[in-house]
View 1 (tube, helix red, strand yellow):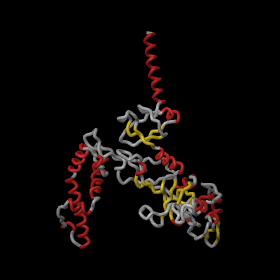
View 2: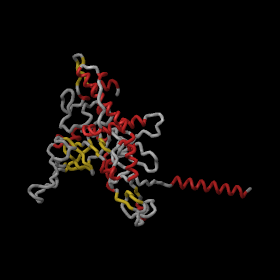
View 3: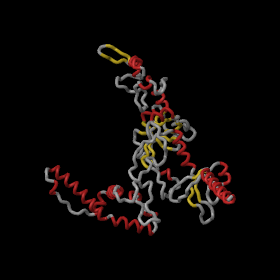
View 4: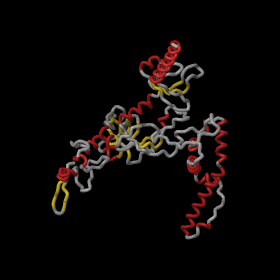
Length: 405
C-alpha cells in the first residue's frame, strides 16, 4: 500500500513539475511561408541560441529563411531595420486610421499544397504566376476555368444594366432591352480590372453561404503595425517632437502633389503642406556652387504628427520572396512643424478643465499663425468672450461658475 502511494505521489510530482516547466517556457513556431522576426536576449545571443537546431551568430533580430540548408547552417538575414521602424512608430505614438483593407491578397497565400482545394483567400488577389511550379500552375488554371461560365454571366449582367440605364435616359422601356453575348477578349481590352470585380463579388457570396467551409477573412486593419490606438489629441499632447529633414520635390513622385512637401522622419517618408514650412528650405543635397558652400543645416526641423496616419497598403507577410516585407507597405503620415503647434497650443490651462474645454480652437492644428474662429477673433478663447443675451452681456466664465462645472 505504501509503495503504491509513493508511486502515485511520484507521478503527481512529475506532472506538477512538467506543468511548471511548461508554464515558464516560451515557444515560437517556425513556418517558412510566413515572414517572422526572431529575437533573443543578450545572454542567449552571445551563445547564438535563438531556439533553432543550430546556433546563429548574428544580430539581435533575424528572419530565418531555412533552418538547415545544404551547408548545414541556419540561413538568415538581418531584420534590425524593420524592428527599428516599428519601435520608432511606437515611440512617436502615431495614431492609425481604422481603414478597411480593399482586399485580402496581401495577407493570404494563393495555393496550399497540403489541401485539395486552394486557399479561398488567395482567390481574391493576383497570384504570382512566375513563382509557381507545375502543380501550382495547373491548380490555378483549373480554378480559373471553373469560373468561366459565371464570369460570362457577370459580364452579361453588367452590359444589361448599362443598356437599361441608357434606355431610361432616352425615355424607352428598359424591360425591352436586349444585349448580345459579351465577348471575353473585347471585354478584357476595354476594362482590364473587371475580373477583380467579379472575384470580389463571387467570393463575397461564397463566404456568406450557410454551407460554406471557409472563414470570412478579418485581417488587422494596419497589418499589425501598431495595436494601441491613441487618439489625435493624445498624440498631439503626449508625442515628442521628432527631428526630420525637408526633402526636395521629385518630379516623378506621384504621391506628393505640388502643394505637398516630402519629409524624411524616423526612417519613414511623410508629408506636410507647403504652408506649414514658412521660412524653411529643403535639404541642400547638391549645391550648385559645389560641396564647399553646401548648407548642412538646411532642411532640418522638428515635426509632430498632425492627424491619424493611413496605411494605404499593408505589408505582405505570407509567401513573399522579399527580404524586407515592410518595404511593401505604404504609410501616409501628415506632419506639422513643431513651432506651429506650440503657437496654437500655448495654454496654461490643465487638460480637461472647463477653461481648456471652452477654448475655441480647431481640433486639428492647421499650421496657420492664428486659429480661425466663428467670431473672426484672433487667439481669443471662448472662456473670456462675451455673449449677447437679450441686450445684456454675460461672460461664459460666469455661466460656468454658476453651474459649477
